[in-house]
Structures are given as structure tokens and as C-alpha cells.
Image (cartoon, rainbow over all chains, first blue to last red; front, side, top):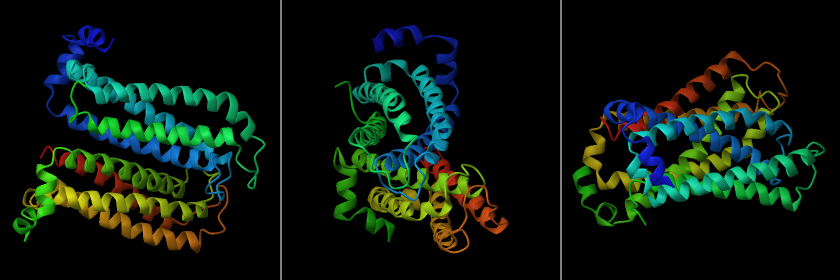
Length: 162
Length: 155
């Protein structure tokens, strides 16, 4: 699947531009790192509060951080796509990249569960409401999966084709 | 001194071992996400965003930020040993370390303000210009740390 995508991307104008523009790669990396800080920072607060920690934060108020999380994710999706265009065959066969993408997909499924099951019930939470098991499960899954995304992403240059 | 450091057993292990360097880098990015993630949001709150988050609620969260900082201090020092001479002559590296030192010092200042003048702040109650300025400098420091850190490999 990734190879098919790499073949489709290879040779396009965008692919050639990313590969040939020497200053672009470090700039994309910087944006990718700032994006991950926004994404993870927001999730640390939202998820840990959802799991019942740091109770001085109002549970509903933490949802004010969702736009920041989405902004971080969007930055990283965009820069990530450009990375793939810049070096399609290196990413397509890379086991770190492949696991990372599966984990991002898993995180997406977890968001759906959060949105359908946890978000509605959190509206009635007060400062002392005990965090239900399903909320804690979704919260810790989110943090674990995103932690895995970070690790796999950072290891891309060091792992091979698996 | 840095030449000596590069030749210690630890430095050689970091440089030679197949997995030491990537594992330290992986730990370093987890720590980065924790420290910078938490401090960026705290600073944005003090600058007037996310008004429903109570500033004082960031006090216990700063302990977690410290955990991230310690992860990165340890992994960072180990990474440093393997190429100490190169790093101490690298401008982005020196800039990154300066930004982190200032950022951590300001974190201490902000902590004391969270305990003091900000303890009672709720909702969109005004935050003093002095505190906002400190938050703006802190935010800049963490962005500079990321930018300079990434540029170490390029300049």
C-alpha cells in the first residue's frame, strides 16, 4: 500500500521541489516539533484530567484546549505529507514509519470512542466526580498511543525495512 | 576537558553502541513533548488564552514538567558526551542551552507567581503586564530551544 502511494508521489512537481529545496527540510522539522509539542501538551492536560488527575482543572474547561490539539495535529499532518513527498521510497518501506501510521490510525479510533462515549458523559462531571473506568481507559490509551507515535517517529532514521 | 569527556567510557558507549544513541533520542523527544507541551500551554494561558483553565491548576502540573526536564537533562547529557567538542563549538547548541536555562529560571518565577498573585485568578480576570511579559519571554525561550535544537544537525 505505501509503495503504491510512493510510486504515485514520486516524480511529481511537489516531490521534486521538497527534495531539491535544501532549506525546506529543517524548517519542516521545526514545524513538526512545534506541532507535536502543541498536540502532546494539550493531550497531556485533557487526558490526565479525564483520567482523574490534576483535579484543579475544571474537566469541561480542559476541552478549551481541543482547537490547540487539532492545530498541532494539522501542522504535523501537513508537514508529514511533505516529508513523504520529499523522500517517498525511504518512508514507504520504513518499519518505524509504518508502525507510526498504524498508531496514528489507532489514535483516530480512540478519538471516535472519546467523542461518542466519553465527551457526552463529561458534561455532567464536577470537580470531585470519580473518573469512570471507560474514561480512564480512553485517556491512558491516548497517551500511550501518542507516546508510541513519538518513539516510532524518532526512530525512523535508525530502523530499516523490518 | 571536553576532549577528556568524549573519551570517557560512557561517551564511547553512547557513540559506539548501535542502540544507545537512538534510544536516548527517543527518550529526549518524549521529555521534550512533556516539558515544552506543558510550559507552552501554561504561557499561552498567562497570555490570555484558554481563560477557563485556572492558572493555579498549573502548579501540580509543573511537577510533571520537571519529570520531563529530568528525562531530557539525563538523555541530553549522555548525547552530549559522545560529541562534546563538536557541540560546545556549535552555535545552535549554545543558543538552545541558553534558552533552556532562561526558560527553566522563568518557570521558577512563574511558579512563585502562581502561588502568590495568580492563586485567586479565575476565568478572564486580568493578569498583570509583568506576568504576561514573563510568559511571553518564556514562550519565546521554548520555541528558540526547539528551533535551535533542530538546527544543531544542520549548521
